Image (cartoon, rainbow, N blue to C red; front, top):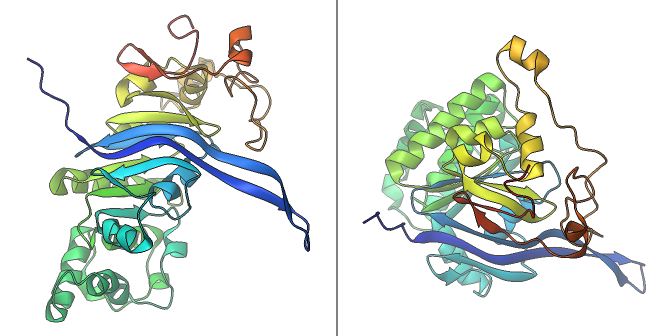
Length: 330
């Protein structure tokens, strides 16, 4: 018999995150809604890396902040080991957050410039009473060594480190409470290419050694393929394709995924010179007024009348899920 799939540690059920648009000063009224995330359902298994990709503005970062409950949900549920974060009090969410941590895109912006590395890493230890005060210095040193930094630098400030070193500090801060799930929102996009590989390898080693579950958000599919077990492709607040990293990136089925994959540079100059790239027509629709039916039909060369008149849900196809009426035909 095949081995049973591990239980999901994190579940998103029909998540909607909408932002109202108001007009007026004295008599404010709502004139529209930005549907940043509009009905996303995902699950993250224990020890798994789930990549989330899509072009800028598709809702990836908003979904990350919704998972962390940094922005309120309009609808749906975020479940961490069965506990609903969207219905809990702020105190209960604070307790749960020990198991759910985040690494932001820009380490310089996410670190307090007035706090030393020691102050940054010791703060969560003291607030959550993870260890006795007398053991804090040793614990901070262990965290720094875990991410490849020398403990002797713990009294330095963020501006005294390089971008890659600052991101290592941010990762160490996320690891301080020994979380079960980490949400990494484009953690390498602000770094030099040579440093990106080091941070990716560090995250992969931490997942393997500590048994972490990781939501890895990026717009570079080659980076996502390197680190992810599964990949979810997001477009205008919805998931359009979901499956194993190898299946989705090597054999994409949704037209949008095919366009993203075609933009991945090929290291062979001869192949790069002659290969055909898929250039999408027009701009993404506005999340304030998304098109009816499949949101991608306004830019899709294979759109049919059905794509314009009805919602296209995710359906199982070749060991993955695809939201397209022509999957397998393109």
